[in-house]
Length: 457
Ligand code: ADP
Image 1: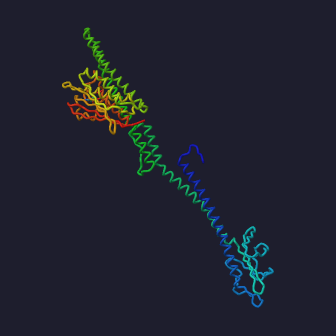
Image 2: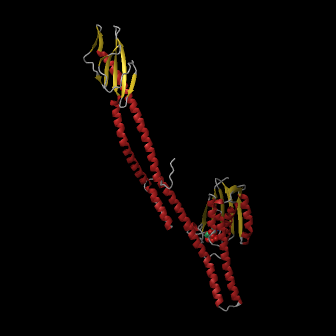
Image 3: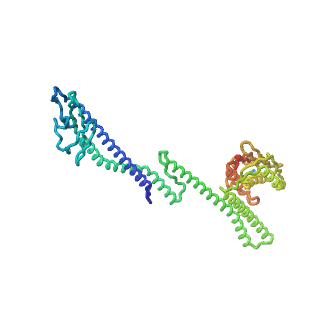
C-alpha cells in the first residue's frame, strides 16, 4: 500500500492507475516473450526433424553403392544437412564455419549447442539398409535466424512500450482531472456558501445522474433543512421579541405617564394594576417559552417507555374536570381501556392538556358547553378532543398549528394565549411518528384528532 501525505485524490488515482498499468504491461510483455521463445523452439525442432527425415528419401544403396540424388539439398529451410557414414565419416555437406567443434552423433535426440553469439539446434537420424550398412544424416539449424525476429520484436517493444505507457499515464491523468472537476466545483460552491454564510445558495449538480449528482443532492437537501431551521429560528426570535416588547412598552408608557402627573392614590393603584397585568402576561409568555424550550430541547432524547395511555387519559380528565366545571364546561370522555403505548408520557400528557384547555378556553358563551376526550385503537391509536365552542373560520384553520398564530389577535394577556399551544401539540405528535389535524365549523365547534402509530420498544 502506497501512502502519500497531503496528496489529492487525483494524484493518488493517477499513481495507482500508473502502477497497475506498468505491472500489467510487464506481466503481458514477459508472458508474450516467454511464449514466443517457446513457440520458436517448438517450431525449430519440428522443422529440423522434418527436413532430416525427408532427406533420407534422396539417399539409398544400390548394388552396395551409396547413391545420393542430385536434388539432395545440403541447405533446406534454414537447415544445413550433413551425411555421415556408419563409422561417422562425413560423406556429403560441410559443417558451417561458425559451428563450434565436433558433437557426437546421437540418433533421434535434439542437442542445443551454444557459443557466445549463437545457439545451434542439432538433430541426427541413422538409417540402416538391407545390405547391413547404414548412414547418418545430421541437420544443423541456426536458431538465431528465427530468434533474431523475436529479438527485433522485443527491441521494438522496449522502445514502444515506455512511449505507450507515458501516453496512457498522461491520458489517465487528464481523464481523472476531468472526472474530478465537478468535485472542485462543489468545493468552490460550498466555500462560497460558507464564506458568505448565504444558505439560499445551492451546490451545482451537473447533468449526469452519477454519484456526485447524488452527493450534491444530499448536501443541497441538508442546506435546505439548515436554511429552513435557520429561518424558523429567526422568525421565532423575532416573534418572541415582539411579544416581549409589547407588554414592556405598555409598562414603560404607563410608568412615564404616571410619574409625570400628580396622581391620586386611586390613579396610582390603577396604574400599578395595569403594570401588574403586563408583568403577568410577560411571565406567562416566559413560562410557555421555557416549557417549549424544555420540551423541544429534550428532542432526540425523549424518554419513551411503554405505559397505559387509557389510565393517563382518565387521570387527565379527572384533574381538569374541576377547572372545566368552574368555567361552566362539562368534560366528557370515552376512553377505551388498556391501550398501551410506547411514548414519552410527559409529552403526551402536555399534548392532551393543551387540547382540552383550548376546548375550555374557546367555549361558546351562549350555550351549554362540553369538551370530549376520546381514545380508540384500531390500526393506529387515535385521540380526539371535540368541543362545541366558538369554532375556527376556514381561512384560519390552516394556520392554527403555526407558532404564535392567534385567530383573535387581541386575546392575549389575561389567559396567556400566545399561539404556542397547538404548535407544541403538532411537534409532540410528529416526534412520536404521528400527526394532528383539525376540523371546525365556525360557531359550532372544533375537533382535533391525533393519530399515533402503534409502536413497541
Ligand atoms: P393559544 O395559546 O392562542 O390558545 P394555540 O396554539 O393553542 O394558542 O391555538 C392557536 C389558535 O387556534 C388560537 O388562537 C385559537 O384561536 C385557535 N384555537 C385553538 N383551539 C381552539 C378551539 N378548541 N376552538 C376554537 N379555536 C381554537
